[in-house]
Image (cartoon, rainbow, N blue to C red; front, top):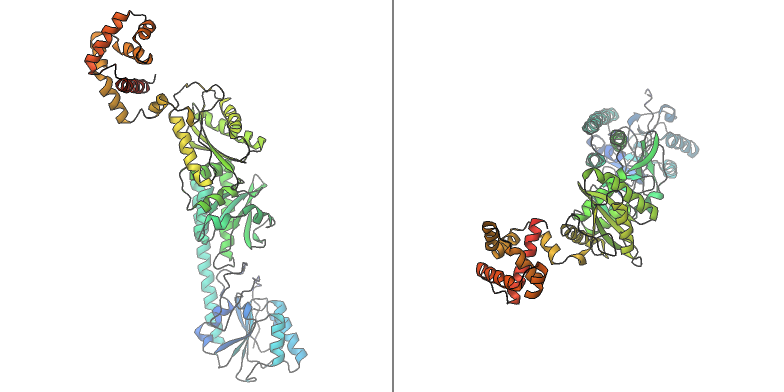
Length: 564
């Protein structure tokens, strides 16, 4: 029978199998089978009807029947290995096997050395049970030995398996083409890193992570798992995975990694985590390499800092509570380098006067925090609003850190308003802290004088006037002010009087008519007369403390509505 040479394959890691036709890949082992795309395994081939009819039994190498089969080779030679290049399923009737144990061992050693996928022997003509020397030799070399109890047409086996291999390879080529087309479309569209990684995760069905050179996980797109499962202990796990200048499986967890470059230098790397099946195939490699290429092009065309983008996205997720769970939130924040245990979180908002000032202010804040070594997230939350999440040790005075941050923000733009929420002891309370900071900002009028001892505003600064200013767009506040003071305002407008000023002076003087007359430069009689007119117009009793309070609140609301 003639011998044929076949393309040299690459060898993947082995996984456990059971009996012929029932073995499979081991989803718990992390390996890479970088052979031709779509190659069936030994277990897959043994399950085909054409071989299953021979009642195949795996005698040795059950842990290796997930090896890819790249070709089928029929041989009756005593030295078939010289015609093999690896990955072949070797079929024999057993007729050429040497009679002596030494010859059998040499026969098996040559097959194992060249990388044969498995040896299949028919127990019909020469043998009715596998000879012990053959079993011992195959077991010693980890070579799967499969016996066939029934006669099988070897030519039919080659036709069926080769058709399967070529068909799978053609389909794999089509899938690879679709991968290239998808990433080309993303590149032409100017997609950012989140979109690119999301596409990679969807195509591969695996979790994909983009990390910086200092092992910060900037973007994580989980697939079939949670961010918590993917990112917990990220820096430690990443540092245990050695760097590489080309795509390959690395580290104790068997990550598939690919370098990401920017202007010819290493900038970070992509990580694809093992999933189900655990072994990475050529298509996974293609997806990861095209992802790296798309990211490089995106970085060249949009040179914005991806670290800043990662901080911005993490902040927005925290503020808007978009995480799937508190555990996911902690894992994502920790993967960006922030401590999450025994930490006091402080939410800070900086409202800059003009949109063109935001980028410069954001950069200054990030540099200040990096220089002082304060762990923090900094990012744009709105066109003129920057958010900062400080992660401080509980013993560190938080107001001192906020004061320094506030002065940094106000230095390039003195009209910047800095507001702070009350500290949170858990990451789950950060959204509440940001809501408080937002309420403080809403209650701070433009040009609001700063407190005497600091350059930022906090919740304790909000009195009645600032509360009403924050609520000025509420129609209930507007209706209240109009109902209380409308007739007086109408009278002043029609008659050119200024009774509202008299009422304001009287209420500011806490109902002291003499003090009100002195403050307004009026006689007491004039004040008495005007107050009686006010009582008549409004139908109020100004000697009533409760009614004076109601009118005073209405005046404060009116001032807020008028922006006074």
